[in-house]
Image 1: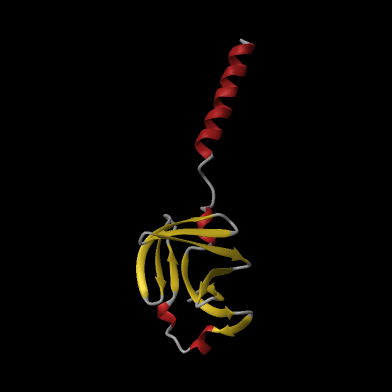
Image 2: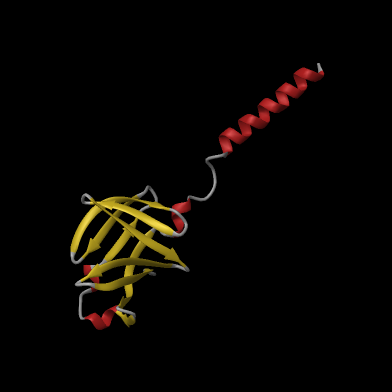
Length: 127
């Protein structure tokens, strides 16, 4: 009788763990939403994105909870997918991949343009 009771208890614990392991907050929720450019760093000099005399709509990201996203780089929009890894966001879109660094509520896109080290920092758009 004692063995049957222990087996039943163990089975209940295993079933509880199985059914609740997928519960909880979606880890993507931290970055879900629209991200707009805030600043740019060109060869060590940080400037506001608005000082670049370019339209905010030329750069940005929209992340959905289901892992899909919309990427706009240099005015070209593409649909894609992403994986959020707590310190980075890996994006696949239009046959390309990008890795954005994530820290303190900022996303950073790094690249070289005309032999200049350039990065764009994005913040989550608030209503």
